[in-house]
Structure formats: C-alpha cells, structure tokens
Length: 406
Image 1: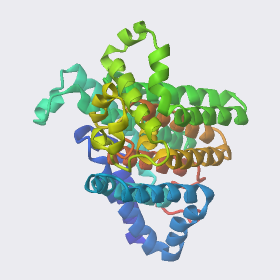
Image 2: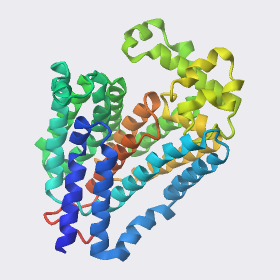
Image 3: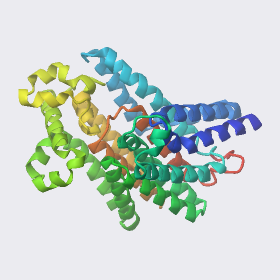
Image 4: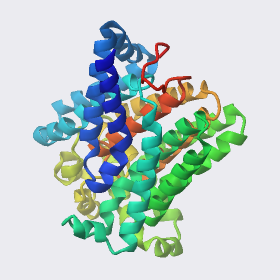
C-alpha cells in the first residue's frame, strides 16, 4: 500500500533524525517521537486496522504490561492526596502523552521501519557526536551561531540521548551485516558522550559497555542475575543512599568529583531519604519533587535536612519514586523491572547483551541524575526500545518497509 509505505518512510526518517534534533534543540525529542509514532500509527491503520489494534493491546494484557498499568494507576491515585494537584497535572501532562507516543512507536514501528532508516540513523548519531565534541572544543561556536544560551550543559541531554540510542542502532546494523557503520556509531557516540560535561552520560556509557561485555561472556543466568541484583539494590537502597555514601565515600573521592557536585548530591539524597523514612507508605504524590520542600512530610524532616528538599528533584529516579509514590510505587517499579529482565532472558545473543547494556546504562543514569518524568528522557527511551525491537525481528527492515511477519 503506497500511502502506508510513505507514512512508514516519514516515521522511520523522524526516528532516525531524533538524536540530531536533540543537538539542535535539546527538548525536541518528545515532538519528534510523537510525530514518528503518529506516522506509524496511521500507516498501520491504513494497512490493517484490526492487526494494529492487536499490536497495541496484546502487550498490555501481559504480566509486564499489567504491572506497568498498575504503576500508572497508582500515580493517578496519588493525585487524591498530593498537596499540589495543578503541579502534578502539569508533570503528567508532559509525561503521559510522551509515554503514549513512546509506546505507540515501540509497538508499531518494528517490522515497518524502512531500509534506509538504520543507515540514516547511523549517520545522524555520528554527526551528533561530532557536533557535541566539536562545539565544546570550539567554545560553543554552534550555540553562538544559533543565538542560544552559551553554556556547556546544553549538550547534556543530547549526550544522554546518544547513550540510549547508539547501542540499539548499532545492533540493527550488525544484524544487517553492516559491521563498519555499527562500529562507527558506537565510536562517534562515545566521542560525544565522553567530550560532554555530563557525568551521568559518561557513567551510563561505562555501565552499559561493562554490562554488554559481561553479558557476552557470562552464562545467560548469571548475566540476568547480575542485572537483577543491580536493579533490585538500586530500588531497595535508594532511600538510604545518602546515608550510605556519607559514611563510606572518602573525601578524596569528593575532591575528584568536584565538577559533579558530589557533596551536594549526597546531602540531597540524605534529605529526600529522610522524607521517605518519615512517610514510607504512600509518598507525597506524583510530581511533587519540584515543590517538595512545601509538602506536609517536609515539615516532619529535621530542620537541617529541609533546605535541600527545595532543589527540584532528588537526582535519583529510584529515590524519586519512593519520595513521591511510597512503598507501593517502589514495589510496582521493582516488579516491572524484574519482568522486563525475564523478557530479556529469552532473547538470543547479541540481542540479550545489547538489551542488558541498555538497561544497565539507563539505570546508572537514572540513579544519579535526572527527573524520572522528564518527557525528553521518556522519548529517548521509546526510540531506543523501538530500535531494539526492530533488531530482534528477522527481516523486519526491508526495502519497502513492509513485513507481513511482524
């Protein structure tokens, strides 16, 4: 069907260029992913509306899909006690539409991505890495030319996006026996990430690469077990992260990490951890991190711990879940992560190693850096998962973009 093929070409092109869009406008990924998702949705509906519904509904009735829906339902339930419903609705108003677009893309794009898209994505990722490195080396000449704010951190989000998509795109190319472009994608993405000032992006790159290497050489059960242990500890220890680091982190380590504001991060983690200890059962409500210092639970925290509750978020998505959604949110998030690993365990190599690398890199970033509900982050994850799923479908990327086996 010609019309559907054109829509798939548009969607595949948008999916491919998203990393470059982030370099040029570092909040653009939700719009790009949203348009790509709409293109694939329209194409699938034109091709076969009944099959499209099946692709969208089938994952939601699985154990993983049901757990994810339960987590989202708990987020909505928490609106009943949040002290800032307008702020929470603004957060969800950005997060939920982007999450829906990411889901549409991951469910519908694999099997319909046109043949040109992986090589276009490879070129875009390479260009994005070079632009980040070159712009920072030239004292942000690109930002000056574009008339934008001149600050090195503007490339942090693009670098984090490269962390997410480079491995899955390389896997697609590797599956198509394009070994040179696959290697170049990883190398140039790493250049941009390592040249950036984002410690989170660099940590994500190292964690993802290490997990990929281990998963390639270890027996499957051990690789999955290590990932499960890491994710379980990330959730379980999040409320006491600050106290643990305050006790075991030497002063020399803080000196080496002065650019990452490690002392402030430890103090922030201790403050949010104290709030979790004060109300561990239900949390303050979804989307409250931006105004956490004004929540009722903040008033129960020791005075010396309250100041840093006003920083906007705890710089740890696992801790953010605890602080906002309490024990039920943490349990549902943990269950979803374990069910995800069970899915990954069934993948063949090298897909399993690449997927575990993506999980490890994502978890490492989430543990140290950002707001878990950020739309740009959700969009990047949706793009990465779409490429991962495309790689796992034999023959899913074709000249016409049409594959009846999908």
